Image (tube, rainbow over all chains, first blue to last red):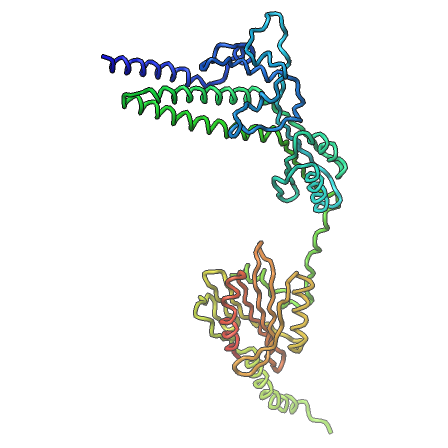
Length: 278
Length: 167
């Protein structure tokens, strides 16, 4: 009888935990900004997401290391008062603090220059000096990554390398994507912790196997999401600058047409005739 | 003393006939029948009296021809003229120039060149021989071209074949 009760309680706990643990989809806006209860599995309010609110210059963002640091990277940007982090309900009339925007910047230029090779070398050096690095160099097109904080300066310096004939700057907002990913990781980690605690108490072999399987699945999911988050933060931290250099020098004159020899037999020999006559 | 008109043709005909026969003979000798023992890997696709053409599966082409030379230019003159035209006028790169001889002892000049044709680098070996004739000379031209790899692997066999050219 006791064994049956244990199995029942273990199975029930596993059922509810799986229901909670699988809720890793995008967070509704209401939960994302205000809720303190919707995703509560461990007793800690998930309203910590309010830490996105502070107005911080996106170019000063430094990517966190979620895989090695227990602290949420975005918590580091939270205001010091911790009002939101404490999970205290906010007054209905209190205006939410402006959310910090996370942006991925990409700039593309096309320049007319006197010397393509030399200009590419000069530009590459300026990028290196700004803390960036070369991503690719193909023909007359160079793609560099520069720290987001120096993006504006690098972009502003591009016209000094030649005449800008084309220019485009794209800014992609990834705040929502970053928030969703962070919350999904957090939720999955908490679910895994709960599963591990249940696993310690589980006695039925079937339950142990089920829990272990779920722990394994959650672990893989967490690692995958952490990888995505790391990639996203790297794209936020380093902006892309692509410059195509075109020579402003006039096109080389075509080779003059072959002059015919005054000796007919000489005009009849050569590779071109051998290729045409066989 | 003048010969009577009726006697002139008889004398002239008697003197001219042997000369005509000799001239024809010499002319035929000069032009001759061009022959060459092509390397075994080459497929001969044309082998008439004035030219030999042969190919290989890897696009090597061997072509021996004769051209009439009423100017009677020397071997040095024609080889220099051809070299200048190839290098200065057609963009060929001369790798080396050397003197060669056929098995029968006839001297020739070989020009070893490289050129880009149809978007690919090709080797080009051209060898000249002069066959002196009574009324005009004959220039024998043997050309060998192939993509660079095939050229390098076959050029020695072609040189051996060129040495067998006759007359």
